[in-house]
Image (cartoon, rainbow, N blue to C red; front, side):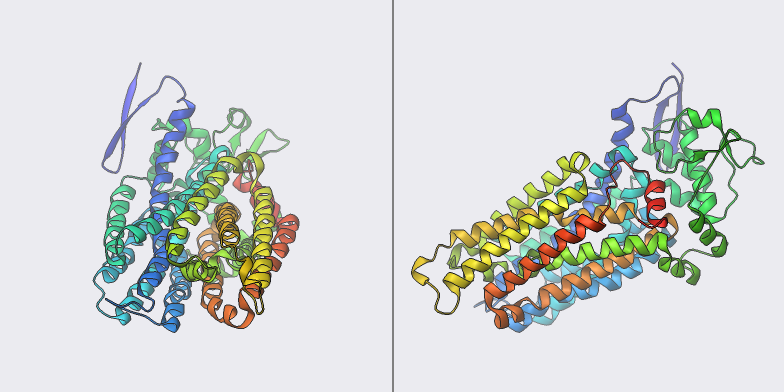
Length: 535
């Protein structure tokens, strides 16, 4: 058996030339690369969940730092309005530095934020830490989603891009658990270790081949693809690599030569096409002359011609955001983010202990957050297990229907028992508790679906910018939902607030039914063409 050694960065791998790698070997490096993105998700969601622990520990505290209700409402939400700043900038960072180095750089504000929390000696310092983490969270979104979408193969993309949903819920559970086992400063100190671990791990992962090709780094792109497809030799990824080159040449107006083909050739021959690609995310269509060319929907192709060879993130690139291939998926992804954060749980999460106390749970309220964390993990796991078989669209509809039912039951209970003139003698705290815990399950079932869509639906030329913009809008919605909750509760009472959440989820069910497409098993080109043609 002939062996050949080739390296990526400082690492060497040995690949067999004699046969195709096994399915496990092809998928293992993609799982490892996915691990890098999941570590960033862990950092991100720990930061979001931490405000619940911090507010519960410092609201009207008798010792250490203490905040009032107004400060609590800002502390629970101000990070979210800072996140759009990071999200918009992250789109530029992803295009300029690449996916891999972006995932390294975004850990800097996280480390700084956790250390500021841990050593905070004033309320003002808490806000500085909160804002620092908020900007850092925004930085992370575009690198995570673009890296996931560009490194995995279509047949496992739905599962791969769903794993962050499980990771996110696990991180929330861990933060809630640590908040009950130790003080808020120790939780921040422990969390500060995560950015360091993440950087060390990401350094071992490759850049995405399509980004490397977009920068003209031909050999680096080939080595990265060999790594991601099972540490194989270039011979075994030639067809896929040529498809990536064809796609890159089409969207970036470059003239990169095909591997193993004369540099004067601009198409792949039919026999090569018929060999089949392991990753058909960039596959083309055969024409009547027996050749295979990369096809892009005609209007999109015209857009590329108009764009010319302008640099990344130029004004012309931003104008492409308004063209159908990008605008239509934006009008799917962003409403999903709105539904996610105005559906109930995102609004009450920073004040969850307060809400459970309103239901009459007393001192046990802080531990009920751990229970909601457990059901959130279960919801994320269901998404991971079922998404490839059930589809994101159907799971979203189930999540919306379940959330609407839970919110409706809480609204009725709050009106009948807790409202003015309510039947206090019929109080049964387990009813709203169980409904909020189930709401956490359904919320987590839907929680990562908008992010899954973000990985898939945007064309390559605008993927970084569109992802950054969508992530920014996500946090605008999250800021508005969390900042206004206490005011909504004051003016509408608990039953009014949960009745409003019920209406949002019903509208969400209708929107998902009519507007969210099924993308499982579809190539990135097929998805792009779907939206470009009027999906």
